Length: 166
Image 1 (cartoon, rainbow, N blue to C red):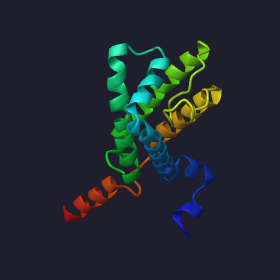
Image 2: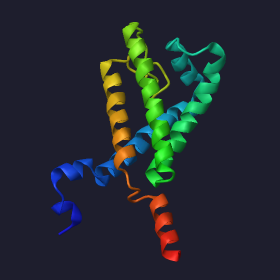
Image 3: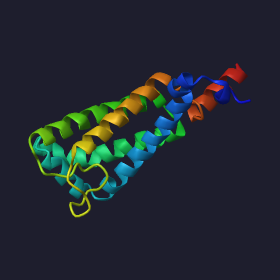
């Protein structure tokens, strides 16, 4: 019988298997979120501006840099490279997104979050579910930070090879 089958349910839920699933899911989510923004940074800049939280002189820099950070962190999480630092970056971004979305909702701004699309014709207005999803993803990243052991990761393979050759 496999180790997973004999493991108590609580340990499976809190263990490295779920952390691996969360890590890979977050990687996919952030890659999918990054691609439209990379393709159209001009439209993403408008999404940032609509929040009315960023100084005008920082909007274009954010519109160019943020999607690439999302993409690199997403790929790194899937491949399993520098897992903890990338999870920390993802968690920090999600915390900032949660604050921004909360403020936009509290100010009754009728805007799209700019999360997965850049064109206003494609994007639906932000709702509380936008906020709830970010909170869920933040919880997933915290779980992965605590329980991920590098299972099925490039970091894990490198660590095993170094240990075997030592």
